[in-house]
Amino acid sequence: MESTQVTLPPLTPDVCPVTQTLAFVGSKWTPLVIFQLHLGARRYGELQRAMPGISPKTLAERLQSLEERGLVTRTVYPDKPPRVEYALTPRGHELGDILDTIATWATA
Amino acid sequence: MESTQVTLPPLTPDVCPVTQTLAFVGSKWTPLVIFQLHLGARRYGELQRAMPGISPKTLAERLQSLEERGLVTRTVYPDKPPRVEYALTPRGHELGDILDTIATWATA
DNA sequence: CTGCATCCAACGAGATACTG
DNA sequence: CAGTATCTCGTTGGATGCAG
Image 1 (cartoon, each protein chain N blue to C red):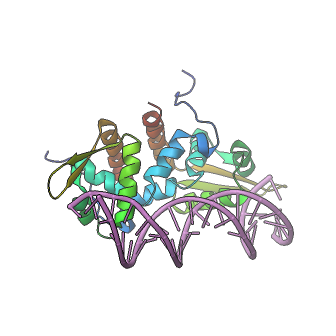
Image 2: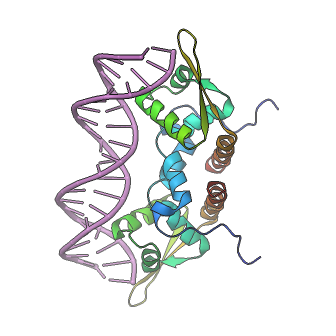
């Protein structure tokens, strides 16, 4: 082969899949949310307590974005009081693995 | 082994190496700059032409940040007119490889 | 050619209070 | 418990003009 065939993106940020991915996971708190869920399913309140300083608004936003992108599932158990559990999808765990790689690189 | 040993980060964004890395590469145009340099050394003007729409200010900012973090080298050839060449360091190429991985994941 | 200085508009994210 | 609604502020990045 002549080049390593990585589906070379067009050169504007809006249409580059890598740029879009990184802009998304680069938003504040997102990596930590993924890390938490990579360890296992978590409830809303657990996540909030695990990440001191995150606002409810931001946490909800992150979880919704992740759900829209098919990276997490949201499961509602109609208990009383209500219980909602978040978990990574297989594709979300793949991303979690990539974050692990970055962690290794960043701390080397 | 019991867990995959990834030096679990503290749970606030400011001190998480992964968060810092992703916030940085997630800034606009940065992935594309790295991509370009991952293919080979480039001059300032070449980069600007390769990425239509990037402003000189932003390009300069990105290159300086990358240099400060030890990911690119800046070489000045005292020609007339002046010529400046940018290239990835070994560590920069490692990051480039990670971006390739993300590209594969993102386009799968 | 390779940048730096300035000004400005847009977006992201925190604080806080309130609801199903 | 699990969010939503506002409001506000800081930062990012684009446009432009000037300098070495």
